[in-house]
Length: 496
Ligand SMILES: Nc1ncnc2c1ncn2[C@@H]1O[C@H](COP(=O)(O)OP(=O)(O)OP(=O)(O)O)[C@@H](O)[C@H]1O
Ligand SMILES: [Mg+2]
Image 1 (cartoon, rainbow, N blue to C red):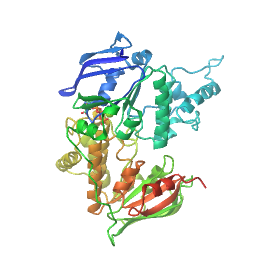
Image 2 (image 1 turned 90 degrees about the vertical axis):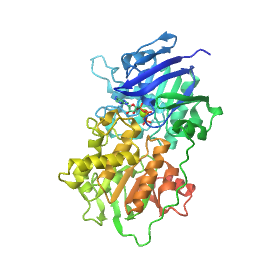
Image 3 (image 1 turned 45 degrees about the vertical axis):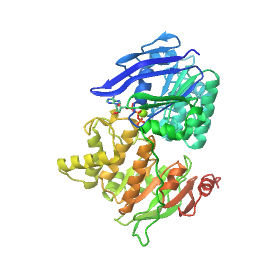
Image 4 (image 1 turned 180 degrees about the horizontal axis):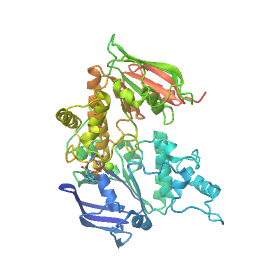
């Protein structure tokens, strides 16, 4: 077997932080390799080097028989290495079709962009990734995270890929959308395209990969055919020890707990609602639904980001917030979905990112020393991996950025916590940390609304489950007594 890609001794440091300590890897044409490891293990750094986005300190890369040093991503793309980044990178103000054909606009005789031709050329690309429902003329920024992801993949396929690198492509896809993506991957594989696939969802690895490579602390710790490994072996390789999430006792709403929030038939006048529910101190309301079911819109209504056109919200702490800033002041903290577009302050340090919400919530000045102590404490509780609280947040690994945003919510000392897909892109160990933190906080009386598209997570964590479909509530019941099928069938209810 001759390798399409052959990598030897790749090393990379950022200042004195040694991130890659000598990576060796061979990939054959038509092979799908899963690249796994905990948050901060060096996965994104490694693939950024392969695709010319980052330089390396040492090591060799042979691609398609030629020794290569890509100094720009353009050179890598021309050689057939296509990299879909962990953070979405569509241009939000352009249309879908403009994003698909950036730098390759079709122009008519007059030299003006031929929008009809562009739309027509876009449709088959979108259909190939199961996104035929997306109108190519829509503005990319208006699409959901999942839809943007699919457009990015469609864009990659419009080029002549020989090696496709997918850095956590399924983090924001539903199981249905992920299955469509896997069909695309299988089709590419059958045409000899090699794929590097990064994911924190181990079940996906067994569906799609031929080989599993695990990174730990910047080095390869195992490289095995998928048939010769197991979930347990992979987790042990990633963490350096046998590790289990550990079953949590079922969550129940404490008897007589005070009401924190009541939503009375709220609707946004644009397809979401009417939705009603109550939230008590110590309750964890798990909200499940397919992408587009209205989960994010519901959270936006709760925190004053989206106007409520019918019904009303009553808060124990006062009037319903009219804006996100007012929400922080009334003790509502929101962890939004999609960290790049929502809320990260990329040029500030991790510490600044953590304490910013507390300043907003307090509305006044807080002593610098106490801010530092708070950031330090949350940093340790959540096990954020970085050089220190002063590091710019944009240079943290994706999962660690997510932990820092979670810390920000906690720093505001809220009475109601709204979490939108809080475990996107975090590794198994950190998921456990987040679950335990949420449970502990609920035990102290915090009320939590927890949106997730991972059913096991909803079932493990929630004391009450609400399912949305097509903007309506299709199930609302205590967690105890609910099975997987009850929740799934409520999510797949047909539109009325
Ligand atoms: N530009 C940078 N400057 C400084 N440090 C960086 C930079 N990019 C990455 N790092 C550091 O390199 C380490 C590895 O990060 P990387 O993003 O490769 O991890 P990862 O395995 O992709 O993690 P995740 O699963 O969270 O996405 C982290 O400790 C991160 O803080
Ligand atoms: Mg990464």
